[in-house]
Amino acid sequence: MRTKVGKFKTPYTRNVIVSYIKAVSELTGKSPTYRDLNQVPGPAARTIVRHFGTWSKALKAAGLRPKTNQLLKGEKTFIRKNWRKMTDKQIAEDLGVTPEVIKYYRMNYSLWKNRKGTSKQKHKADGMRIYGKNCEVCNLPITELHHIKPKSDKPDDWAILCPTCHSIITRKIVTVRTRNELKTELKPYVKNLYKTIGF
Image: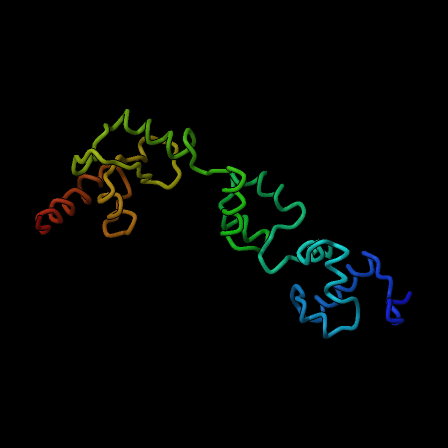
């Protein structure tokens, strides 16, 4: 085939282009960019884009991840099947992307981990019915649910605390392993803390 100016041009097919992109990827050790194509003779970047529509689609067709950490075919299904039983970090490690990519996908498709009516929100309502609406340590009416044992479904492992008391535990300033230690360990510390604060 010849162009308008009489030069020969190669009639590349999609399969040939995919094989070419894979070869360039093996040589460079990463998903190729426009500049990487200059190292290996073959189709120009604009030829590849003309065939696939975008550079990202061409890379995905070759089984390579674009630089933007986009998800490949089948990975969205993997997230949908596992987002409830795995953390974003675990899914990201399995797929070879950053946790932010997983979180971004979940947010776009309304796959909220703590939406109303699930896990933590439901536990808080149950905990407030058992332990009251005020903080169990300092009696403030602004409260949060604290899991003494992480992700526990047992009410004995919950506590209703204000943001200050909660942060004291989560920042490991005071260690609380049981509900009894809320009074023996946390309460004395909070009493002393409020004595030193001047308003």
